[in-house]
Image (cartoon, rainbow, N blue to C red; front, side):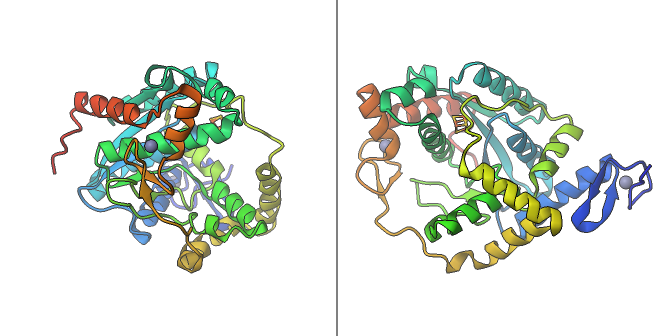
Length: 327
Ligand code: Q46
Ligand code: ZN
Ligand code: ZN
């Protein structure tokens, strides 16, 4: 039986790109150290920061919250989580349960935003009414609500659970279509726009998808193993993932190298042009007069729902004692 390269206890993982075996405890330490180094290297957090974690209930968001909670006292930041109940049948019911269990276990205050209560509708219905594919509506709704929650709780950063595999695939996809502006958004962090958009950080920037799964599993963090019924396995991303995986097979560590190099060159990529404004309904960031969320909800539900979402989150944050924020 292989033994841990550090302490000689039975190993549970082999890290190919570092040619080392690790036992359970040293594996957990290894992942937390990766997150620690990413937080420091890319200056993602500071003492006294309030970090809002987008908690979907899946493995990456569980690993993200688990690792950030483990490093909480070392860095001196505070964590708040937000979970959006998308109303996607059984999948959302189970996601919500996993998110609630995890937040409780890690003692992180959780703001829950059920779309059926706030908007009176769900992602499948909204996609139908807006005549758009569910994933495009869902992605936009999640981005909007997460940012709205971060603005309401006066967070200093929003932490996203994107891992190195996801990012390598987005990077390659954007490169193939020469969408350099999209690549400019794939760095370890983005900056805030005062009171309209909170900057985002990606603490799992150098953590592989498989590593993230194993960390959540070994730490006993609750997460949902099932996929959303709308995941499209024919997407280009799935094919690119196979390509990137076969390259990684031949050159272990390739994805991490790709992302580390991108982080160094990210400033050289062109940023999206155009004005940055505020939505006339909800006041949050937009490239025009009305943000995509208010536009879609106005079209599908007859009313721009941004202000209602903000009000709902504010009342939840008040009840949890998160606002007014004490510094
Ligand atoms: S939850 Fe939403 Fe995903 Fe389901 S509808 Fe698509 S985007 S697949 S991460
Ligand atoms: Zn060990
Ligand atoms: Zn708006």
